[in-house]
Amino acid sequence: ITRLGTGTGTPFVDITNANATVNNDVTTYTIGGTNNAQVVGGMSWSNDQGGSGVLSSATPWEISGISLTVGANVITVTGTNIYGISTNDTVTITRLAAGMPYIIITNAPSTWDVTSTPYVLAGTNNANVVGIIGCSNAQTGVKIDAVRYSGGLSWTGTLELVSGDNYLWVYGTNIAGDAVDDYIVVNYSDYIDNLLIILSNDYQRTILTWSNDIQNVTILAQTNQYYNTAGPWFVLATGQNSGYVHETASNYWACYYKLIDATGASTSRYDVGKMTFDIQQSDGITKKENWISCPFELMNDDCEIVQQKSFDLMMVKMCLNVQGGPGFNRDFVQSQKTIGNNTIQASYGNGTWFPTDPDATNWFANKMYMIVINELHPCKAKPLTMVGRVPTNEIEFVGTIQQSDGVTKKENWVAYPYPALSTFGQGRIADVLTAQGGPGFNRDLVQSQESIGGNAIQASYGSGIWYPTDPAATNFFGGKGYMISINELHTGAATNWYSPKPY
Image 1 (cartoon, helix red, strand yellow):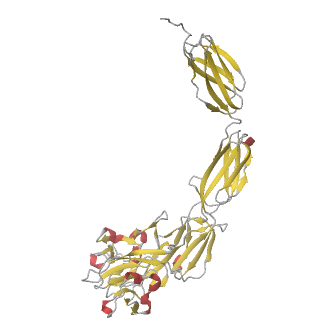
Image 2 (cartoon, helix red, strand yellow):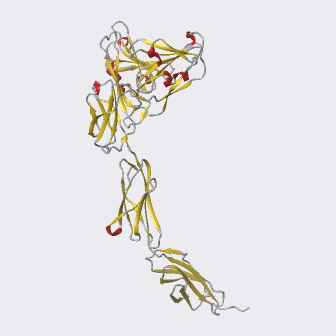
Image 3 (cartoon, rainbow, N blue to C red):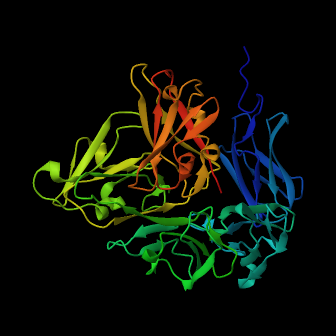
């Protein structure tokens, strides 16, 4: 048995660094590794781009200060055993031709929403970005050269916006053509948002508020008539900031408002309005019923459309009498729990509501309300003013109309959803009725009042024809209440009523 000495076996060399890519400013590199005991004497290293050296075979080992040229540097470490049998390992260190570029936009809007154009992009970059820094809006396709400042380490670029989302880009390259970019998305609205209308506590004035960053606004108005029959818009006020008070609003039965900014480029996305109704009081002998509804979309303080608001927010009490004593002496407001459901009510006395149901003191946009004035309260009519957003949808879902149970007629107390005048045909009320032929007592019918607080009128519907008791009985008037009565012959599933916008 012959035992070989150290250095006679198979040699092994291992570079423990992985292949790497370094920036242009890295000019030297350090590698390390191990070898087995069969490597004896010295070892050597070389860079195929130039440079070499020797090192001890003691393990582990390290080679520092290896010079790098631009591009791939293949570094080889070689060792031999006592018989001159060699082994090696290699690692590739790639030095970039230029430093990695860096660029960033620093003035993105906090909410991504902007209300003016053009938009000035601004940002910074590192010294590896050379030449032109470009800016572009992907929505317009326009590309511009940014203006560079601070020795080329900051920049601005001015871009025009279009309505909607705008993808704004900035881009640059280093000397080797390596590209870098950054982008933001801004939403440009050419509308004035968050337009809100409220009524003053004395019920006399309307107050308009809107987005606080839109100032010097021109306010347009139209007055006195229904929205779809009103005259041309006129300038009510110019150079106004949010919180405008229309002092003479109470002079007009109805008034509608829209806004335009100082440049004329931005307008309010929707109109708001107010409509005042005369709530008839008692004649001192009988109670007086006033069938009424809200012709606007209801809004909360955040300008969101809501389905209901409290009687107090709707200021219903402005048309009622503060009666003390027993409940049968009070004015009250009746409605239905849901359309076609049981009747609920809330009476009003000594500044307090007395409801029969929690919903009895909430005003729903799609319901009719019956304001009943007690016979103890004979006086001139009192105003009730409704304010809100003019609907903009092409068609509105009004409500689900309940059919009969086959035993009794079914009443559905509903609102017409627009501050407008239209025919029953335009409002498509017949879609939820049965075109019953034969005698009139078998027909469905729609009841309303001549004027709010006036005599009841109606129009029955049979075989595709309306049979009115009054010419106005087949028209919708914004603000009136309507009672759809389904004949006991007409049972079946409830039907949804959708009414198109009449303007």
